Image (cartoon, rainbow, N blue to C red; front, side, top):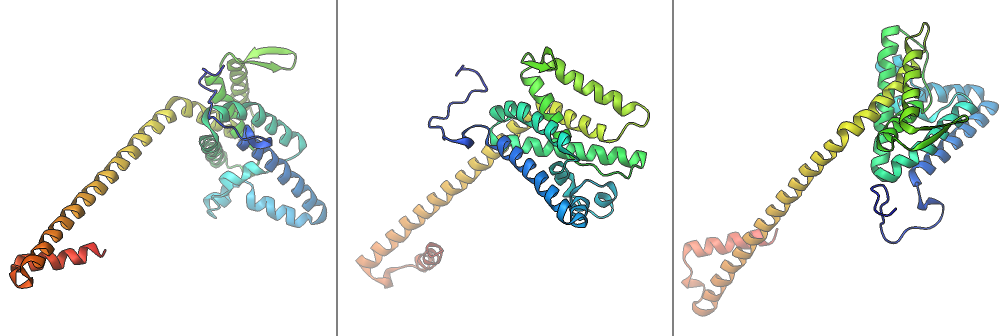
Length: 277
């Protein structure tokens, strides 16, 4: 098992609850806590709860007209009910672990951000075309991104669908196909395009983002090499300068200041200023 690409032995492993899938666990706890907190707020101060939803839910006009760009992400923190929350959390639990164990925590979080932004922008695009005023909440778009990416990486992984056991590639295909049908049926809600937007990002990430990562890493390595070259050049220049100062000071010790040429005096003065920097 240790020779598989998704099993990475890093030596000493942390123990405790956060030892495995820390980002996935934190996200699940956070989503549940936010949902419970908002339920308490709604029971105690309904108007405050409505104001919070208005501030965080994805609203086309508020993003385009009021520049509330944070809603592109914060809408994923909210859910319309217990089943909405549970279904999304199950998706994150099942497929998020597959993705996090392969990407690592930082790249995993960047993937989630990209999937959510793509889902939200897809929603705004179609909402503008259909002139839909309803806001969007939920992390379903991110879920679809996770499903599609995991299906590309582990296509033959067996999954349970009700009483059937099917490979993950078939499950992802079924999910996406249903969303496409619901998008184009009469009166289909525009939130389905957010699901498809997240799924599209999962495909794009699988197909191209890995190559972009290699490109960015190459650029970063080139920048580090250039920086090291500049440091080496500066070090050699300072060493040469110190050598020249030592030569001039030796001459002063032997022959006195009067023996220095005008050029050596200028060199000594310039070197003193440079070495003090």
